[in-house]
Every structure is written in structure tokens, then in C-alpha cells.
Length: 494
Image 1 (cartoon, one colour):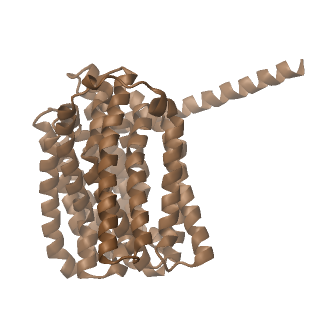
Image 2 (tube, rainbow, N blue to C red):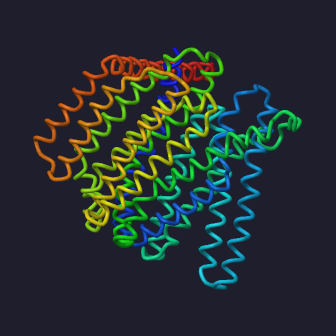
Image 3 (cartoon, rainbow, N blue to C red):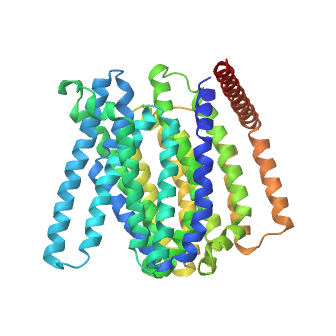
């Protein structure tokens, strides 16, 4: 079964996934305890602006590369796609950097030049990194992909700790320089790992690709990505406008807890989108894979969400005294990774049918709703209102993606069960905001997990079977390895 193959590849990333999770769980509390909320807020806004510019310059061609990679089995054609989809963003990034340097020199020569140069370097490296990681995904270099994820987290964490020890924790470079070093190392590793594809593969003729078609597919995705980034950053901008940078730091620290989810989300997205597109190219009429994966990811994300929700108090204690307000922010922010990840299974219809304009419609609707609700609630409820607005907006985001994709690619998903589970999760979030951990919390957690299992018994059974098969394969692999080592030892003693 296709779903078995997909889950097997997800399990193959388990080592790197767990290690990334461990690094995040250990280092995030250490960093937030040492770095002031204002510095953490500045770093968060720096990343937001960098991501916005990278998306604008990409023209959506990174997603175009992902969609069109499997349309031709010829490596020379794939290499031509790579050159086109990376070359134009790099040219636009260079023009953007030139304009930024000229503006900086004319307005405030000498001031903040170091920050501007770092910003430009981030733009270049991030542009190459987006495509470099895509190459690893499309070639199913899953172990290397997971390894680079771990490397980036480890280098960043080690660099921040060293910087704080040597130079103190009251300046932005303490966070910025380690992030830059980690990103640079990952880019070099990506290029070296696929050096034959990047530098030695012959290019197909230009007639092998239709530039107008590629840009026509990518531009709506670029616009949707920019709107999505605005959608993601609206809460932080509203907190900065109505509150202060310190509150942005507290809010961002709560969002960093979502890194616990990002490990699951990124691992799933790494394999799911290429696999779904490849499955569609082989058999467009088979829709079972999409429903099966949707039900399994619903079980995984809601189960993990309920567990993290009950553990909120313990997670906030790890962040430090200055970040205790994050306890009232985390519950509704948990809706963000849950809705975003599960919606990746229902929105796949837009990708396989190349209906890229649908993404823009979805993002505009969700972004407008998020902005309006944030404007209403943030001045009244502070960062808690921003979290509530964002969480509910992501619920709307899920249904908009599902309905829009269903219009061009019909798959029957169990939306009634999903809606019931979402309402229960929201009620649990509301309860958790006003209550500390207690025996009742454990009872509610058990009830929630039983509810998930009763709503999706088939998915739970499949996940259990696949996990058991994965563990058995690991055991067999170890036995084969031990047998191989014994044979080598016996031959060496002869």
C-alpha cells in the first residue's frame, strides 16, 4: 500500500526527529532564560522580515520546482528546472540587496550597516537553502534531510550558548550570528551531498520547459505565500503595536513551544507532498491514499496536541520567570500546528491539479479574518487575545483549504468527526487557560485520547500495525548487522 510506504519513510526519520525534538526541548528553555524578551522579540521580527523578502523574490518557483520535478524522469530536464527555479530568485535577491544598500547609504550612512549586511546574507543563504532542501526531499534523501535539521538546531543552540558566555545576552548578534552560521553550514552540506546533480549534470535544452507555464503556476503561489506570512505574523505585529517588544518576546517564546510540533509537521511535509504528487502522476483516479493519510495525521496531531495542552504548566516553568505569561497563550496556539498539518492532507488536490490560484483565495480569506479578529481582541485581551484570534483563524484556514481543494479534486473526508474533535479541543484549550495541572487534567486527557480512538478506530489500528512493523524491521536490521559483524570477525580470525 502507498500509505504503508509513506509511513515507513516517516519512521525512517525517527532518529533525527527525536534528536531534533530533544535539542529543542533542552535548549529553548535555556535560551529564553538567558536572553531578554526584548532581544528575543527583535530576533523574531528579523526572521519575519527576512522570510517575507525571500518569499517575494522566489516568485513561488520553489513550489513550482516541487510540482514539476516528477513530470519528467530525465535528470537533464530536472536540472534545467533547478536552474530556472533558483536562478530567477537569486537575481531578484541581488537586486533587492542592491536597493537596500543604496537606501541605507543615502538615509543613514554607517548606521546599522552590520545588520543590513547580515540581512542580505540571510536572504541569499535562505533562498539557496529552500531549493537545496527540496532537492533532498524529492530524491528521498530522508536520513540526510533529518541530519541537516539536527545539525542546524545543534549549531544554533551551541553558538547561542557560547555567545552568551563570551559576550553577554543583551544584544541581537548573540542570536543572529549562530543562526547565520548554522544556515551556512546546512547550505554547504546540501550542495556537497548532491554535487553531481547541482554541478555535473548536463542541462537539457531550454525548449524542455515552458517558462510561461512555470511562472504562471508559481506567481499565485508566491502571492499566497506572502499573504500566508502576513497571516502568520499578524499576531506579532499586533502585539508589538498594542503592547511592546517585551510582550512580543513572551509571545514568541510561546510560539517556540510549537517547535515540539514542528518536528512532526516538517517530517510529514517532507515526505507527503512529493509522495502525493508522485502517486497522482501514476494513478489519478485512486483517492484512498489521501483519506487514509488524513485520518492517520488527524489521530497523531490531536493526540499529541492534547498531551502538550495538559503539560502547558510544566513547559512554561522551563521557559523562565520572565515568560510565565506564556501559559495563557500556548493553549489556543496549539491549534496552529494541528490545523496546519492536517490541512496538508486535504489541500493536496490544489497541488496535484496545478490549481495554484486556489491557494491565494484561501490565504486572502484567512488573512483578512485573522487581521480583523486580532484588531478586535488584542487591544482588549493582550497576547491572550492574539493567541485566541490566531487559533480560531487557523480553524477557518483548515476548512477554506479543504473546501477549495474539494472543488477541483473530490475526496470524501470525515469532516463531521473532525469538526466534533476540533470543538472538543477548543473547549479543552479554554479550560486549560484558567486551571492549573490537577488530577482532573489527567482525567480529561484520558477522555480526550479515548475520544480520538473512538472516532478514528481504523486509523489507530493502522498506526499501531505500522509502528509494530517499523519496530520489527529495526530489530531485524540490528540482527542482520550483528550477524554481519560476527561473520567479519570469524573470517578475520581464520
